[in-house]
Length: 477
Ligand code: GLC
Image (cartoon, rainbow, N blue to C red; front, side):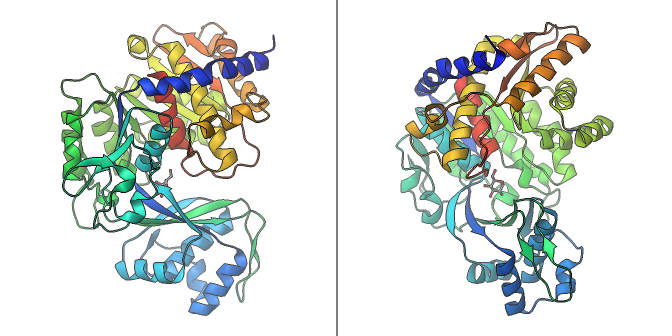
């Protein structure tokens, strides 16, 4: 049997069963960041017409400057910067008047769940976990209606009562992140300048979120400790800056959150997972590694986030190598190196076409190698279903990709996996089994990997990493 057929069968034979096992997970806590994503696709023509209507200076728009939005002109400077380079960036709106201006003048096409915490909660609830508790720094009606209307998805009211999240309507400030999407090949004409051609479809995020930026914790949520759960999925630290707009320090906000997490961990068998996420502020990135990670069993990242973290743990050189050539083998080298620097029991990484997890041998009793692999396969199916349909909002929708012209793992994915398998055999003196079995036991740690399903024309990519991260864990529990 070819490697590709082995994986195809493995997908078909395990994923439905793994997914139906999600209902045996008693509870998941998803904290801390949920927000409203306002999706706004823009064309070059829209941009030129706004710019001439509002009379912005084109020279100012094209100039370099701080990556923050303090005036409406900064907002357009950010959009143009990303449009011109085909890159993704997220800038913060600090100024309330500019936020109001943006709300009044930009509009949006649709609202969808935003923030790792919110996206993870929806994904966990739809897969059938018994209870999902989602932390919300703010939960007005416009936020709560983005939670799937499921009885197992809960949060706290102003009075501190735990109820169905989609029914809550707190008198809070809406936290809006504009996801401004632009397309490859589109052109932007600005008076007195050469035509700008967008080299790659991507997005610019303009974020107004005074509560998540300061890691504001809902005091009522601390009481979640009275309810049953076995997994805590942490995210949201990446939004901090070392000195907050109000002068407080990220370090103090982190320490306060750790007291809460330690309370949740007391007297129970719980797995704490930290999603690294793209953290711009280097001091905060270092604090996440030094302060938060030691309180967690598990952590997750993509290849970009791996490079960023390697930069702050004294591995600039290796980070540079991976940045230059982001092959699966180089990423794997970086992952193993990071694993030696952190105290966590496991790191799960996702990149285009491949998932790899490294885990301490002693952790097998908690998450077996076989279960890790099953979780990965479930994650690939859920993520590809989300990418091809645009949303996952029912249990059936989670296996869409398995039911519709399922061709198995992508060839590119199998190739990447095989290269890591050979690297382990040739350079680490391990057995060359990873490509076929997805599992290798090495003296110091175990490696689990799976080739993923690639969707040629995805309808959405927002929140893909978050969906993958939680599905791997639910499937492994
Ligand atoms: C960032 C954005 C958020 C978006 C999320 C997706 O955290 O701020 O709006 O939903 O990424 O992962």
